[in-house]
Length: 426
Image (tube, rainbow, N blue to C red):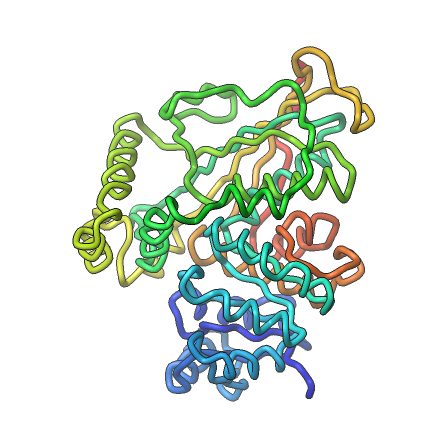
């Protein structure tokens, strides 16, 4: 049976429909075969009609595959027809594992847009060996969580001109006059993640998937308060810890660098940049109340049933409008500290860092436009740049899988670019 280059699973969902649109409109679309997959043929056909109207390319006759996360047979049938499955169906802790299992067992590569560390790392624990045997690649967190961050650190390491020791990163989300609201699916994932944190047993999983002790630099990232003022030449505002998957993904990439690539691993802290302390306190209080209320079934049901009101309209069932997405953008800042001198990996630098390099990743709307560009860039890399992937299949982070590939060129075609901003001797 011949395989489609790309199968977008969950194509009729809010994010999945954008993935299809940006696939069809991309520079890489010519010569690419694709299919859409999901539960409802009617909704999938509607997506194809809408994409045809928006892009001016008639894809209304594209293949439609019926697949459901609760039906193992249908997932197997879908995976047998795919070179790469783009899985856009979340929350992944509820619906994701069956798709990974089907992909691995049926010879398909798998990328997703999950930002759920517990699920992502359990997939590595359960399917890494089988993926290696089958020669397929399973790469999670291929959306805005966490390609900008993970490949940003990779970019900084490659362009540091010395030994990078530690990085502080800052997410800066920019909105226009219309404001912005994320789709409620992201909110539901957050609720499930907070509820499952106490029982996920991530420590045990991490010991299994990262059994070797790696040695990082003696100088660690400065300890910061929960809310603190950014005083950089390039960036101001206030910072709070970033609650996304980025740090966990980057730490796994650093483990891969140390144990497989035999390059120096770094220390990392991730923050989100806010405009004022007042807003920082409000976000902190909201997260604190969510963390409490998710513990009790009654209040958790209320949180899940009324995402608009319970998130103060930061999340909506309707998601952002087209105008809001058009106006939105992001800048991901990387402040890297290290040494001008390059030493063998088994030797430690002495004293404080003497070099600082600042880099950024910039792009369009983080939630859906950039996410679509990121996951499609991952899929294109798997299809068209196989020579620069790891030699063996397996479960990888984005930097481990794509760090030496042409993915940066694919990302740039979607307006997602990396650049050096400044360099200093300290």
